Length: 148
Image (cartoon, rainbow, N blue to C red):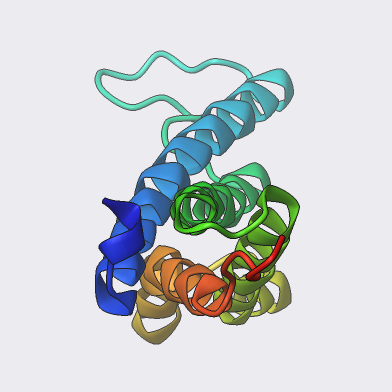
């Protein structure tokens, strides 16, 4: 099945996996950031939201971009391996492509870690799809060599 996948299909599948990975990584980062906040703030008694509700610091964007790259890498590497690409080459190529796809958003967050205007937020939100497209592009030419 994976050997007949077009570049567009692989990019869409890797982008979807990158989005799932980003959501998982972002949620894990949000939990870590909340634990960090609770160590530094006294718990207040509020009706709905406490002082550390939805607190985001460094772990949330790290989880978002890391999960994005990992999710896209896994999907593209598995598809390339099924197509005949050697496993180490498939993993290396797909991770390099996913990291390049995530680089613009990661650079933007690294420069301004606190508040994101809408233009930055849009780039951050499409990062998983850019990772998927990068991973898919990186593994397109990787196939088993004849005679090996």
